[in-house]
Image (tube, rainbow, N blue to C red; front, side, top):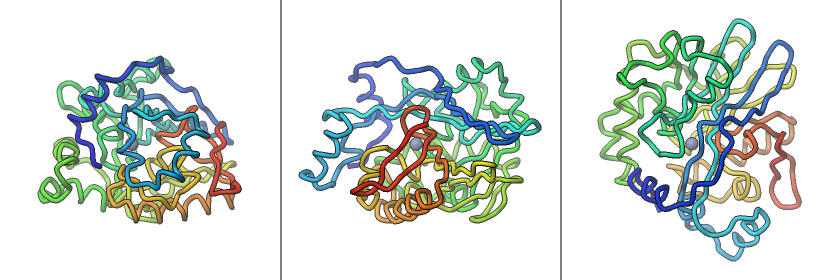
Length: 300
Ligand SMILES: [Zn+2]
């Protein structure tokens, strides 16, 4: 099942608002580098959007282990902020005001840190979905992070700028296509595009992680404690870890996303990398270890 923005909003309105931390305050200091996640709020997703098509008898015990009742999921949204004394880098910019009433709160999180949007030097995008991109513009449709250099993977940018995408992406995601194109057009003359494997900035290497979107990028951070900013290559702490090979309708190319996830979790667990997940719980910073079945997310 695919979900349109209208469906997201209807579900959000019907859901029960749970108190959420305004900003998550997960933080790592690694040498001169400080990485923290800021909460943009959370999404409200119908369970079928994530679990649709998965084998129910195997799925039920996984959901039970993670305390998930049936009904809407409320994944958090963690925007990553990396500061090293000279650079202030945001990885994605949150949802802005127009996507979902429970998201779009990054400005409040920045306020809580006494950081103004003008102080951000770089904005790096993992992909062009609304909860990652739509916070790009202010209420006058000007770039909110006015002094920042904006950067996105070339394949991802080309996909969302392609006029054909709106007609080929499927009805449920049409609003994603229109929304991405409108926003990317506003920065088309100032955005820098990069390729898979490119050192985007000193110590930051792009890694193509396709499936969730066609040109999705993760970022490998070369710090004293190496880490990977995953974006939505891994989106939840339950089925994505226990059964990374299960396709999920929340990924645009579900088979390719599963293949990407299997490879990533294998590498992250083998190398002991810190991972930073946009929708993972407790601030989204943690590690992964192999479990009897699949993998396990270890927050913190
Ligand atoms: Zn997302």
